[in-house]
Amino acid sequence: MGMGIDHATFRAAMARFPGAVTIITARHGIERRGITATAVCSVSAEPPSLLVCVNRKTGTCAAIHESRTFNVSLLPDPASPLAMRFAGADGVTGEDKFAEGRWIEDGRGLPLLDEALIGFSCTVSEMVEAGSHTVFIGEIMEIRLNDGAPLVYEQSRFHRLEPL
Ligand SMILES: Cc1cc2nc3c(=O)[nH]c(=O)nc-3n(C[C@H](O)[C@H](O)[C@H](O)COP(=O)(O)O)c2cc1C
Image (cartoon, rainbow, N blue to C red; front, side, top):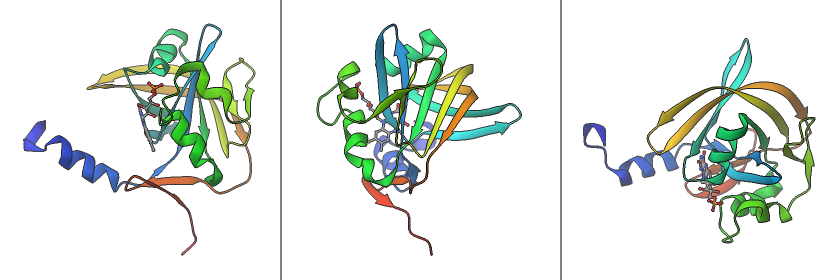
């Protein structure tokens, strides 16, 4: 790794970086795919776009690559069990992950979590291979909003936000 920064140092530093917890979803034919992800970031307002960083080993990456579409559901704070499930914690993969949670479809038939604080429907405009991950920049085609407090991840634990 560059400048002598080893894996453990990188991981320990990034673990302290608080992240809003999302589930990125896509469709591979009739099958749904999804992963828990904190690597989600606003890119630009003109056109409205965001980026996601997705491990190439995941079925979700393949599905986004094929379909050139993905959705992002921002999780409310009671959704930590669902976040663990979509991170693969129960050993559940692929379509089976969707057996928990109330899943609806956007106008294109892609999955969104009904209780997501924000549901983004995106079309891929750019892809960049970066190490183990693919960075997908997505133009935001639809936004769905719900009230509630977001789930936050830091130091390998889930947190809820509190005003100072
Ligand atoms: C809090 C949290 C954040 C994560 N963020 C990302 C991320 O931004 N990008 C990513 O590719 N994987 C991320 N992961 C790991 C994926 O969720 C995990 O590799 C994937 O769900 C494995 O799915 P599979 O078992 O179906 O292959 C994160 C996991 C957790 C617990």
